[in-house]
Amino acid sequence: MNHANSVVYLNNTADNFREKHLAEMDVNLILDKESPQLIDEWQEVPEIWDAVRFKCDQDNKKGKYILTGSATPISNKIHHSGAGRICKMKMYTMSLYESGDSSGDVSLKDLFDNKVTNKLLEKIELRQLAELIVRGGWPESINLNINGAMRITRSYIDAVLDKDIIEIDGVNRDKGKMEMLLRSLARNESTISSNNLLIRDISDDVTYDDVNISRNTVIDYLNVLDRLHLIENQKSFMYKIRSKSNVGKNFKRHFTDPSLGCAILNITPEKLINDLETFGLYFEALVERDLRIYAESIGAKLYHYRDNNTGLEIDSVIEIADGEYGIIEIKLGSNKEEEAATNLKKFYDMAEIKPKFMCIICGLYNAVIKRPDGVYVLPITALKP
Image 1: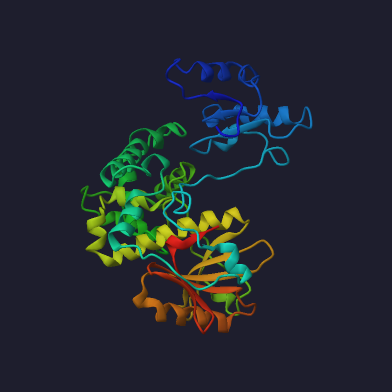
Image 2: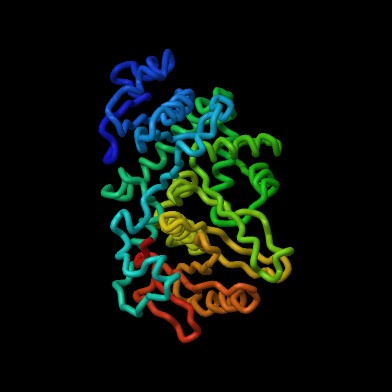
């Protein structure tokens, strides 16, 4: 909205979907407003993509259209990729820096440039950290109390189950099985879990009796969740490491925001505080949500690393465009600092091309420091792009 001079809402119920009906009759009927023109939920009429691509070919003017949507449309209804005409940008929920919950004393770019200085910071409390995870980064939740924020996220899950899993492509999917898959994903947040493990997990779910789910069904349902932008899996970092032939290739499972998993499992801040193992996994999800946002803002990519032979794992690997990368371990408390530092240094010693930086991101920490061994330690509430 900040970048547009006119707007078309294809899901506007106030005028009985008038603009959507016009677009279905002739897409050119809605492409005549002042540019830049925002077309919201454009995927409701996928033909808009090809029409916009054609309009872009008619002159050299850039930035005429902004297409926004909450789901990915069926690809066979789009005849051109849009390459050279349309640039794609994925929007995430708000990072802690965007929501005002991170001071921004350290930037990801500064870590790559070795420009981080030691500094004392205000320490965040365990309860505050739990609330940030459960609240999530939804813009409408930022200024709400925790109960109101939890209701918003739960209503989003309910809408997905009641409506979106069918409306996305017209296929009548089983709501109960999809809910069981969501619970399995929530239980396996921030883990490297195969589809077979998810199937076994669903089979052990006691919510429904005698439920069988096939591998093909799980693959289809995961694809739907991906197209609805509910899941954001973290790929494996697989090269420039001496033992690359034994590097695990499975991705790490995440929801696009940790609050989604909390809503599915009815996790409250109190439950996180009373279950530190789950707290640690969801804290990792929070950190990696922010790392993905910060990385992409500087043209970098977020990965994880796992060596199948040695069992060595690194929570996060951030690689910038020129191939340089940094490695990060994520720990809820500072009591795991030495363990994390040992892991990072093992990786450093075996890497053919050395990482630009090694860093431990903590939840409960009140300083930014560079240790004598070169490892940075800092809280997530101090990080920015």
